[in-house]
Length: 161
Image (tube, rainbow, N blue to C red):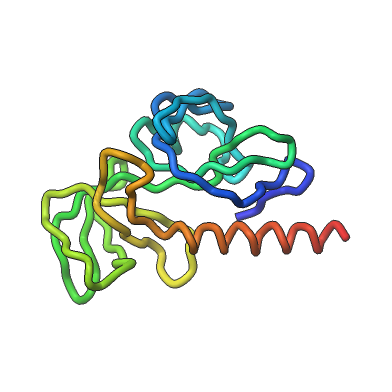
């Protein structure tokens, strides 16, 4: 993941939101009970309408330009089973895949929705908590995403120093 400093780097005060509508250069999100239209960082290559969908849980950050942007998204998936310490999930447009559970003690019920992410170290796919009705209550790897973004911003700043 590359976040270019000249594109406006995030402040890393992340907050959760749920995507309501997607355009190529912006998303309408619900966060904290309010809707707003935000941009996307360059990490989401075009066409964004194929990568971010209504219902996706996202992390939002205020950019150095003062605008808010989507900096991370979790996929929606359905838990279909478990095998050998992995969780089998079905994800729209991908079918079934195996993911590493973020918390081994978290109860998982086949047929229920869960949040799925890719790009964090340690596994190709991670499964976090169950799908919820309010973004703020989602049990996802928020700290790991924040750490990844901090490291990316630090590396990018070092390249421009």
